[in-house]
Image (cartoon, rainbow over all chains, first blue to last red; front, side):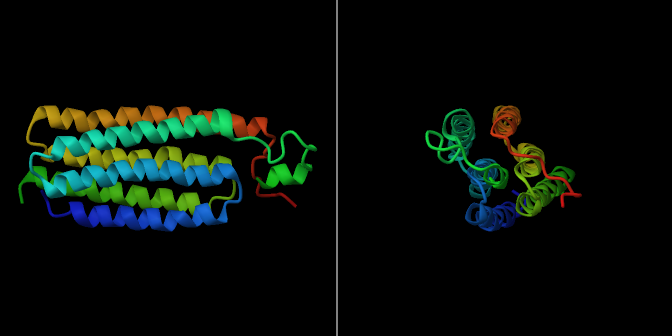
Length: 103
Length: 102
């Protein structure tokens, strides 16, 4: 325990808060999903840091939670890319070209 | 301060810096491909630094190995997701950003 765990975890948390701006601005579905993936990676970092800031026997449990979070973020990203990400109105008229570009 | 703690502190701070750089990239890069590039590489480097720094503090080899095992998983995941999102974006016809665009 170097005393740095909690400050670094706080920096990562601020990082997450700032990256919410990308969720608001978009402009497309994929840009918002990227912020979700960032939550995955940064969440692992925060949980592992908290495990070592707290110390004690609960540490390995925290690490298991971090592993699960990594798996869940991966699955959500894959499901999005393979299944959910379609053109805005797939079964209606084909969107104009510049609309696709904007996304 | 013992050498191990010093190395651990340096790795933790380096990791935090990489995370901040990744977020700056996510916010400032112009299109989905460049943002993917910032997210998939820099953040995982930050995660690797933090995990290595904490593994130095672990009380047993088993805990340290478990920490270090998270990293290959995250690397594999970001490689797969980066490929899938980029290829899907290309299939949807999203054009890569160019500086000399009129």
